[in-house]
Each structure stands twice: as structure tokens, then as C-alpha cells.
Image 1 (cartoon, rainbow, N blue to C red):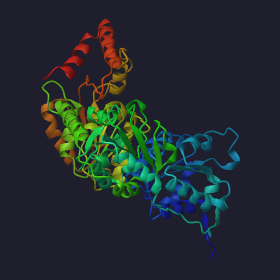
Image 2 (image 1 turned 90 degrees about the vertical axis):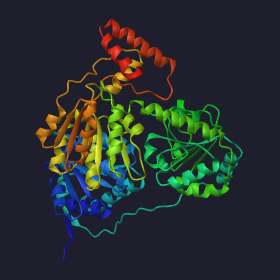
Image 3 (image 1 turned 180 degrees about the horizontal axis):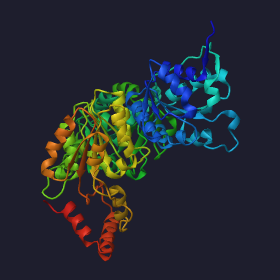
Image 4 (image 1 turned 90 degrees about the horizontal axis):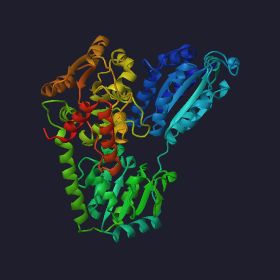
Length: 574
């Protein structure tokens, strides 16, 4: 009996064998053979989105939380081109994702045919694998290589598939298999001995934990206990470091707090674990820096280090712990803990009802209070991500999904779609900016199309708030940041979502409870303060001067009311 199959079927078979559960996209002419093969599959489900960018965001978020390869697929030309922003997001998050970019028939390529796009040229800089199938007999080999690259190099694989190739039938007797080795990687004994010697003879040691500690919570806390060290974490490491951790002193960076910044700036030794923090101004000036990372190219990448070694955090800490002395001096740790307590108190000052406005901090605290124990919160880039990082607590089961590496607008709602598809029984919530939600608003329809009960919260402050803050801190009068928004609740209701609009702080708590309890997709449109400032852990003189200059310029431009409201909202005790 002939074992001939279409190339489209072979590709789908390989994806199913790799563990792909969902393929996100929009159907189209050159993609028809692929979608027909998916329809016949018992293992892969097609997820019909309204914009391909949303499909890439959703697929990337699913891969991020499941650590399993996920797929998206598009038609030729503009169809597969629309994925680009979500593909960059997935690549920077180092998640396994495959894009099936269907293409014009081979005879039309290179002729400037309508809708022709050179996908290999477009995607080669944001992928770990990018290749067109030109020989149908090589379909299984190339698809397997693409999957292997995505899984083992931790990134996006792009497979370009001309339509005539996709429908060609070939013998499928290849023995190509998918391998996913999991080696244990740690520094050598000599390197560990050198690290332990430095840690043992210095009293003020701070641990700086990044996303690389995702599976090493217990080992991390055990090391801090022996060293009596404060633990500072990046925003991406929040989910893995913050909970059940008496040594946690918060974040550093612009989202951080004074305790995290102090713990790093005043330490004698900084032990970096799985962290590639980009902002060099937040590193210590004179401390000995030890860096442990699974990727050797990250060593000394952001700041010069004394010792740089390759290793995964969990096996490295397991091997290091017996070599480290139990310390008794808690002076430095106690100082950082005290600062952390004060910093949390300061952050919480606005996390209460107000008689005049709804503070976004209060809204986020209510989400934190009433969200399920295993809820996933997706937050838009901008002020929403700051409130999520500062006011949504983790417990070892909750997760946060934020575009912290790529920093794109409009990520939260699309990523929530992918998370909900992967985890149909978990509560998935977004904290969306009004600018972000309006950018990809059409895919609220996907919640109805795919029956995805995500809970969308819109921070409706009628502005591109984070950009406005940047302009003001530079002494500029804000321009082009105002948004003339619709009633998002009415828009969502017209699409079929349960929706509530709130502009009164006294009504917010009940609204949040009702909104989260709704069994289907829902949207909560909250009119939040237009004058909220995101306060950094350290306020520099240039920022003070910038805001002062803004105040003068704004007054001269007839915006004195805005200046007064900003001062009242942020500096006058209510």
C-alpha cells in the first residue's frame, strides 16, 4: 500500500507528534491545504482569530505558560506578514513557537506577483529557524528540523510553504524524529569553589534573581537563608521569587522600590542568577559581581562581572549550597527588609477608595483580592504593567504575562486568549490600557467565536498615560497622547460580552466581584485617574527639574488645571 501523503499532511503530522495542541490564525487561499489537514487531525485544534498579530501573541503566551511548542499559520503576503510583532514577542521570550507562513506557488515567486512577500528575509532576524520547503520529498526532514530548533534553541521557527508544494503528495517513509534532550548543566567544581569562597568571606551579599530561577524557588530561598542575603528580583521573575520568601525585598529598576535598589547598590557581592537585566544604571558601582546563566553570551553582557559561569539555576544552587557557610549576621538583611516594609506601605497608600477618583492601584488591589488562587493576569505595556507588577501578588500558582522584553502595546488581551485556550478552567484576567485595547479591539470577538471566558479590565484614563508621563518627566508639554474613547462597555456588549462601566470608587468593589464571577467573557471599563504618576524607586534631580519645567510650560499653554490636578492627585493627602 502506498504511503504517499500531501506535504500539508506531513507537516501537520510532525506538529502533532511534537505536541502542538493549537494553531492560531486566519484561513486563506495558499493556506487551504494546511487548514484542511488540521481539520482532519485529532490532535490539533484551529483557533480562529480576527487579526494575525493577535494569533501570534496568543500562541506565544500559550507556549510561555505551558513550555510546549505551539503554532500559528497564515496565508501568503499580508496574511503571514501580520504575525511579525507577535513573533518578535515570542522570540524575545524564548518560547517554542512555529509559524507556518504559506506562500505563492514557486513559479510566481520573484516576479513581483500581487501579495508576494519574501518571508525568509522578513523573519530571519526574529527566529531561530527560517526556511522555505522547495523540495516536497524533504518536507518531513525540514519540518522536524524546524520543530527541533524551536524546542531546543528556545525560539520561533518559521516554515515557508509554497501552495503547490503543500498539495504535492510524496512517499512518507522518513525516520526523522523529534528529540528534546534535557541535560543537567552546572559550573565545574573549581568554579563552584571560587564562587563559594567569595560568598563565604563577604558579609553583605545580595542575590539578584531573574527568569532563569523559574524552577529553583526552594534552592534560592535555602541559599538566602544560609547567606542571610536579601533577594532582589526582576519583573519577569516575580512569579517564581515573590511568594513564600522571607528574603524577598522586591524589584529594582523603574518598576522597583527603594529596598530592591538599596540591596543592590549597597552590597559587597552581587550574585546574579538567570538574570539579563538591561539597565546598567541599577547595577552596583563597586561590588564583586558573580553571574550564573544558562546562556554564555549573557555573561558580562550588561555589566562587567568578576566571575561568570554557565549553569541552570536549580542544579547550580543544589551543588553550591553545601559549599556555603551558615552566616549569623543579619544587619544588612534587616535593613533591606525594613526598607521593603516601608516601600510596600508607601505603594499601598493609593490602593484604597477615593472620594474623587479611582486610583489604578486600588483597582489592581481589588483584582488581587478577588482573583482565584491560580489566576493568570496579563497586563498591557505602559502603566498597567507597573500596577500589575507592584500590586498583584503571587503565591506559587498565580502567573503574570507581560511584554517585558519586547515592550509592545496591545499585548494583554491577545495573550489572554492563548492562555485561556491552553487552560480552559483557569481564571484569566487582563489589565488593559485604553490605548492597548483599542489597538486590537476587534479580537474581543474571538472570545465569542472560541467561547473563551477571559475577563478584560480597561484602565480608561483617556490617554497614552505612560508616554504622557515620559514627556512630562522630560519637561515637555504632553502632545498627541489624548484618547477620545468610546464607552468600551457598550462596545463589548454589542459584541456579546458581559460588560460593566464604573466611574465611582464606591461602586468598584462590587463591580469587580460581579465581573469576575461571570461565567463567560466579560469586560470591565473603569474610569481611572488621568493624572496618576508612576513613581520610580529613586527620583533623580533631572526628573524633578523635568516635572517642574513641565508645570511652567503647561501653565503657559493654558493647562494650569492639569498641573493642579496632577499635584492634588499625587502629592496631596486625601
